Image 1 (cartoon, helix red, strand yellow):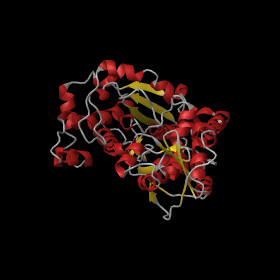
Image 2 (tube, rainbow, N blue to C red):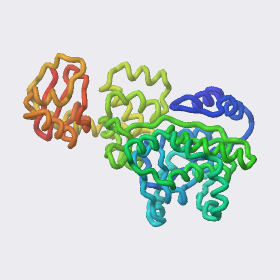
Image 3 (cartoon, rainbow, N blue to C red):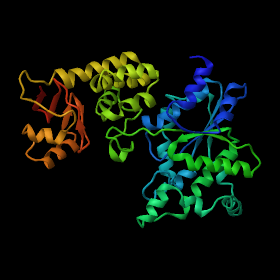
Length: 389
């Protein structure tokens, strides 16, 4: 890609908000070296490919010659970011934060060139602050602003608690921007409110307001938020074969989004693959993601291993067949109709427990619907097979 095309890709692909877009575009086209801020609270020990969406954006900034300033939120993690939380987040202890930090940078280093990163811990400046200074900073915000956040409003309407300390989180994140004199801050679209706080406080301290770029959030394999608690995340540290298998189990409607956010294929290449249908597209997607993190040879091995393990090796010579008259059909209904489950509740339980595979891909969503195609193989447990005719 040309320099101009790289800038366009950086500002549009997977991007939900840019402030101020014209200013940022002009800066990127100039010879100015931007200070690109990104903060991470070590709330868990593992980085997943959802986190990686914004990390790849950071890498794009690096490749264009800009300075990435990575802030480890060792102080803010003790409060807990309320963004996109339906319940009050429990603060972490200093020991928990330290434990989570082990291996964190190593995982980030799979994407971002850490040799070129300016690394900071926000405890460096927050622990030196005074109560008076925090009160002065808090005067730049109102309770009305805080209550406009969707998750706060939702929790209050459901009579769930909203901690006063949660109101302080955007303020602290904003002060990080002041401390490092950020030119631009990146984050997921759930971080939009927090990133705006940085602009507010920079203006208060006489600094030029940072530009903002937010990226779309990548759902987990079952369509819900990617999270360890939902057991639907694909981690950077997963083995190649495990990554491949997890990707093969994502919901069909997520295929295009995964291509866009988790691979570097062009839009034209993605469109051509999608047209081949979900089965082939998902295989190409799994291959591309494994290739991105482990190399082409390993990706080929993972694809071959998956095919042997789930498509060829375990298939019996003969199996019952079923005709499915609908373009889209509930998987639970199919299992009941084929007498592979005695009831819909049992079928849903089998699906939810990971006991059902469609063309080798594990289906974990209890209300899953599939688009049946001729020759599709449905497997329940280790011994029950069904072919769509």
